[in-house]
Length: 91
Image 1 (cartoon, rainbow, N blue to C red):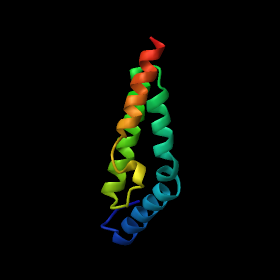
Image 2 (cartoon, rainbow, N blue to C red):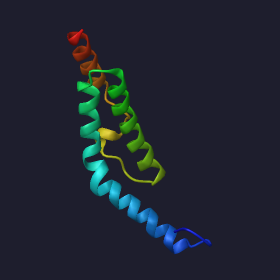
Image 3 (spheres, rainbow, N blue to C red):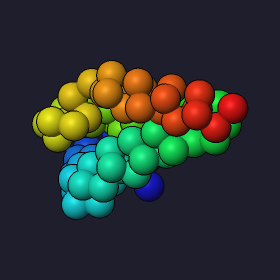
């Protein structure tokens, strides 16, 4: 708990968040979100993939972390072009 200006606890919490992101979400989150963006059959799930990708970027920036290359932009234009092609072929 972060009460009474407990600076030590605050920094240990930030460190835990950074560790979790770097050891888990930032390792596979961009792969997962790109697969969702490209293979989504509805705009809802495509939006969910974009939202997830953007959220990972924002969290990394807020926590002053280096982004993996694949996350340095919220989405790749190739992914969106592929998603549009897949979407068009399913109609």
